Image (cartoon, rainbow, N blue to C red; front, side):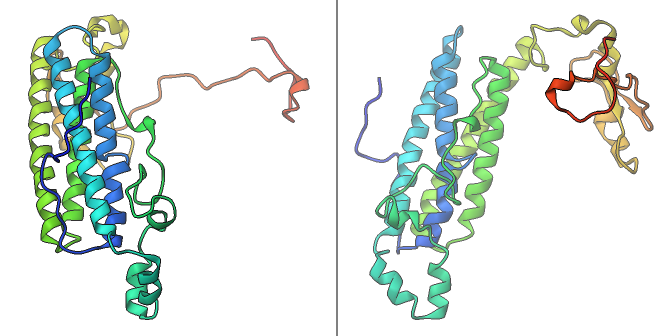
Length: 279
């Protein structure tokens, strides 16, 4: 059950309208790494979680908080659009400099949403459920969550420097602080799961199940010019799970065959030479 409270998690109060900034903030709302994505990602991971209830409870806690962050961004966008009427745009267009600035606004904020936020990114691309990860594997999902929070915080930090509006910046600082904590949280969960099950996903398919292919799990194939990559721990160190030492291959050779596919039947009109064969 969800219940809405009228108060926002943190105060949102801008100093002045800024339609162009509102367009940028749409990325933080409906972009690939926006708040809508982490909200849906954590909630679906939580709804689908089976087993240890502490992970499910944590996912639902943070997913529900992210609903609040979506609402904060919607409020922020709405406030930045206050006063962005068609008449004001027409007046601004008389000044070439102002016209250039106002030309960067999102026309859908006027045409579609009536000066409101939309579930889209800064280019007007609708939010996509394909942005989220909810695999049912806890370690894989927690790693995806760490990446999502890392990318999201990065984008907030970038837009933070695009404005001098202290009200907007204050809201962003709250989000940056919470995103920092969420990174700590996923790191802690990842560490706990790695200690329990190992570092490789899925733990239920152990290295010995790879049989004759096990040595390939320790090889670094250098497939680009130069050998700078040979100095990294991924090429000279040991596997984190203690299964062996990495091997650097400076000039790896293919170990497979040349594909020789069967030519399809002529009725498929492929215009290929040769006859259909059965090899």
